[in-house]
Length: 490
Ligand SMILES: [Zn+2]
Image (cartoon, rainbow, N blue to C red; front, side, top):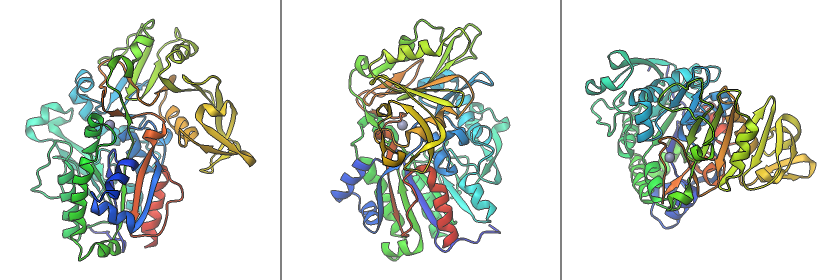
């Protein structure tokens, strides 16, 4: 801990996965979550923070921690196809799919390759940026963790056979304080609930230890990973786990002489990661099987490298999918025509040189756009754009000023995903209420799912208490610089 000169007011960012504005507001207004209520009433509350796209945790956390969309951070989703190495990359999208692609590979992808091979080498994480300033940081329970301290991580003996690491050991670049399941613990005697993660209680204990021992660094990022699985199963209105996590936050605030004192000592932030769109009960109605839509083509099998005869590859991220053209025998026009015939399909996008084309399964017409040009959007990004603006629910006010409706920050987010990796591919989104399926993908009937560009999954809540400084824009990609500025100025 040599060079550590903690800032006067450490920033603690609590990420509650799948925390959604409506559920949070109901929980607070009905007095079921006193800690979150206190932070909200004594701080600022934003109900409409724009997350990343695809709306999947690994892509979102990478955007939050690097301040970039996937065109720079290079994590295109939980499931994508590496066209250079002809390999399906899966960070673990569900038991069946993980089983097909192999546990070993998924674990290896999630724990090692995501941070050390895939995450953009030309960009820095907030941990690396603070490290350059000789400021310490902590990551608790996050799969995206790249920092500048090499640390040997060890797989427990019984599980070594399940990893691709020699002797179950590997050297990772981590933040100075790092907690991730059994691989790295802050409290040496702590017993994580899962191999690569802890539940909300474990996570809160790791954070409380830092506070108790007076070891809070300038910035702490702490993820509660528990809600997502429950919301997938129970639907977006369930608040049982918010109440439980709130109890843990109460215990954290109780460590100070008063909750007001906790705000004097630290800056507290609570943020969601993605929303969910509710799904119905009928498999036939709700699940769009992409293999059926593309039945005339040879589709690559996810458990092996594509064969030369394979024509397309499909990577589903719940309510969005990447469709890859593997050889010249397939025309992009044909694939798009087939997708547009499906009435449950929403936004479809692909790129052609500098241009991005957007069509929809719901509306006629097309949008063509590219970065740079006469139109300025509400985030001060410039675009050239022509076509049917209502396709993306864009509003053009006077003076060529663009604002967004159902698809927040759509132009930058679609562009981010289309430039996230190499290859000739199409992005397709499902309408709210529907979900994609391909080979062995998990699906979520009578519950909820996410992944798409729609506002239901794209707008999440943020509470900030302990500072009056507001983030410049309500977007995840603006959080990194905002937090660094806060730390620099206090
Ligand atoms: Zn999820």
